[in-house]
Length: 100
Image (cartoon, rainbow, N blue to C red; front, side):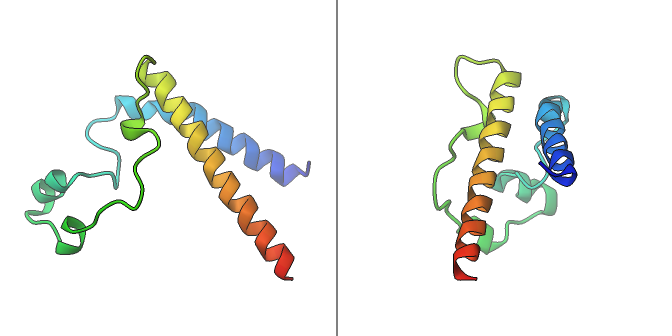
C-alpha cells in the first residue's frame, strides 16, 4: 500500500472515530435541517425544498439503531456510510477503467 493510501485510510479512520462528537453539538448537523427548521431560520421554505421527496429511505434513520447506545449507533452509521462511498468509488473506477 502506498504512503498516500495509508494517510488517506488513517484520515478516514480518524473521522469515523471522531463522529460521535456530533452528539454533543447543539442543534442539527449542518445541512440536515427539517422543513420546519429552515422555515424558522430564514422565514420561508423554498418551493423546491418543500416539494422534494426522498428517492430512497434512509438506511439508518437519524443515525440510531434500536437497542444500541447513541455512540455505537453513530459509529456504525459512519462505517456503513464510509463503506457505501467506498463501494461507489470502486464501481466508478472499474467502469472508467473498462472504457479506457
